[in-house]
Image (cartoon, rainbow, N blue to C red; front, side):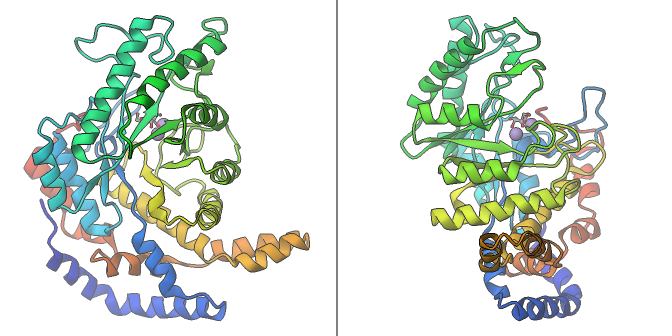
Length: 427
Ligand code: PSV
Ligand code: MN
Ligand code: MN
């Protein structure tokens, strides 16, 4: 299944006059506040969000999995699915692989498939949270932090192997999420676990190519429920500082304890120049991996307020960070869900771009709390959807990606091609 440009153009033609009317209204509204809408549209058009290979099928929960059908059966089909998303929104121009769920047996052919769909390979992810077939040592009691040097060695070698796969594909970063920790008090020593992990990470760091980065992801709990070795942004930053300039902290929105002020974490990491990027998702309770912006859109906006500020201070564009969705789908079509997530990210980014920074600064200096809140909420409550639609349209994408996905019956086409009962490889 491939979406042709003429299908997108036809779809856009049918929506164009309505879209232009709405866009004119938004432009006028922003113009009154001296905001140049075209500049914002260009920033949105440049913003690319990577799609993880494991979010293309139904994830399920530990209680069950209800496959939706037509799911990708191979790495090639996963790349093709991301190609469909990117054709529709022109904002999902890369895929992130998880080894060994995805093994690029022949790098050249997978690269040429990706290139034909205008896709690149984002960070590669290692996996030491599951035992693999024919693996000598078990990760039941940890991997990079394990008390047994043989287990640590195996986990280090796996990460180095992942770097090799990534190098062949043109990736530029290794993402490490460590599930290591303990389920009960007394099970392990916090200090030794940290030190073993540091030594293991140092070996992996030494194997990084010159132009690579390692992203260190933290998570408060799960699958270990008493302690996690890299439990929070502070631990992650500590590892990164000890490792060196090629290591940065990766923030996954679902990996915090309830009520954590994630926007403040982001501001601090950016102040220190140590933010690698994001795993975007949303949650009500924990690592729910729900559609971005579906539960706490105001929090997402506040995070983007800090991101925009931090990027300006660092003199970096949005391409200086790794943006990715890390989601799982139980009841929605995974592709539709991902389209919704990308749109939510762009909406929050657009809202953050229209915040009147000068007035905000002034309100802060005058301790005018009411005005400061109003300035933020004024931006948050502005309907920026026409700007996001326009950013996709000028890049050759759709005004309404989910609309065209449905009009073209993409999912039933995929079911015809791949079968009704296919289950995505991976998770
Ligand atoms: C762990 O919860 C996580 O967020 C990490 O990023 C993993 O690599 C990913 O999910 C997939 O399991
Ligand atoms: Mn993640
Ligand atoms: Mn997670």
